Length: 135
Image (cartoon, rainbow, N blue to C red; front, side, top):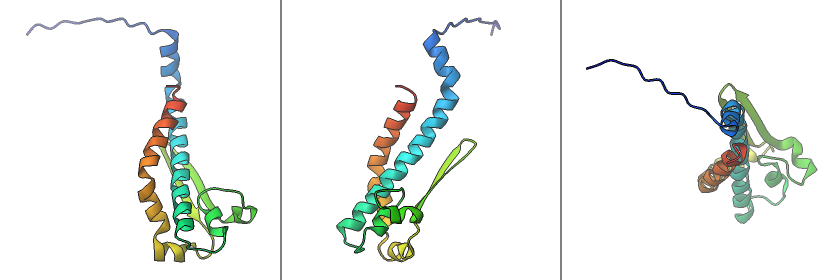
């Protein structure tokens, strides 16, 4: 077998060069946006389950799930902690009202919300990546 070498010169236009130069930052932004958006979808589904099944009489629990909504009283009870470490982004989400753990143990609201939200999460994730990468 003969050995040889092949030299290839590739010239990228300015748009392609710009894309590759900014790709790491854009991908990190996309990852963060995907995690935040998926957390909101999950929270929305948990809120819907709670309302549809009449698990609580007040809106305090519903408004405290995942992110701040209209109720000022629920703002301190929202669990929404986004952490970025290297190439990993995590979101701790839920409700800190005193009876949230009891509701979850009895009805599995957050767990069922996660199951139900999978399809919407995929759609939202794709949209966030396309938006961050300007595709």
